[in-house]
Image (tube, rainbow, N blue to C red; front, side):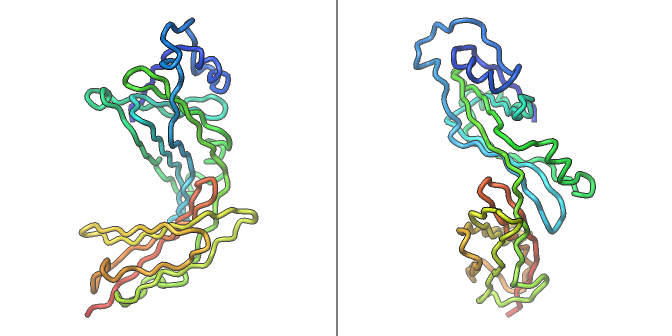
Length: 247
């Protein structure tokens, strides 16, 4: 994406510049009223790793949310600019609220986990933005290298033939690596053509989901994902497939 941020100077920028070396420069006193100089917050700011244990690839995802912004920048813990976003034209005039994106997901054979971790070190990533009216917006996202092990799907087995009236997704709780703090799981069942997706979020103590029969059709192939999510939002996907029986 083509991303560029202009940042209005002001007293608040001096404090932020200490955490983002070289990213912000002040230009003197701001004559606007104090309430207009005060930075607004990003209400949501996440940065996480997603590992697909079945496909053996891994990438980075991010989520930004605020009440109408025109520009946004993300800086690494050492102050390096990672991303620039700018809304132009009519979108720039009314502002963006929520933005989700994910990077490409190179194979672990091409980009091993250790190299990816070196590219994206653990720590606090600063986020700086601006509203269409010129107000500054600030936030931060904590990135960790705590990656959950893959959930072991008990049923349906890979390629299983299931009864659409009694389809249960069952998996073993994720407890590895040692010390991992799993906060929940996401189960996704998808039919490709035409696209139809069922997504269910459950807390960490739930390891079984019943698929509503109204969602499934007879004699149809479905893709299944069980995603383990740890406290820092990093997540690991286990993929599988199953097919419903004909009438």
